[in-house]
Image 1 (cartoon, rainbow, N blue to C red):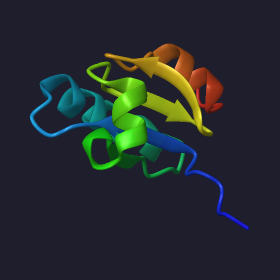
Image 2: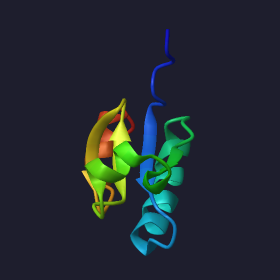
Image 3: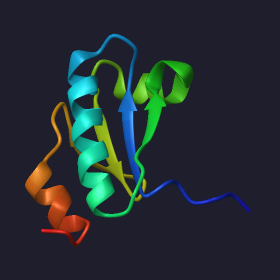
Length: 83
């Protein structure tokens, strides 16, 4: 049996300035919800790299794509129940 994906993940890559901004935003919002976002390097996983290519950062909530390029703060806060 595999463990479920962490509730809040950020697909990112080295040298991505949008990824750094998204990570800072996710850290802040995650802390409000009692969550620690997991950063996932898409370049470390050929399947993720093939699926997401240059379309990073990508926010995953409960394993599902939530937003990309920027964090949809309003929607994420609503979906986490902290709006």
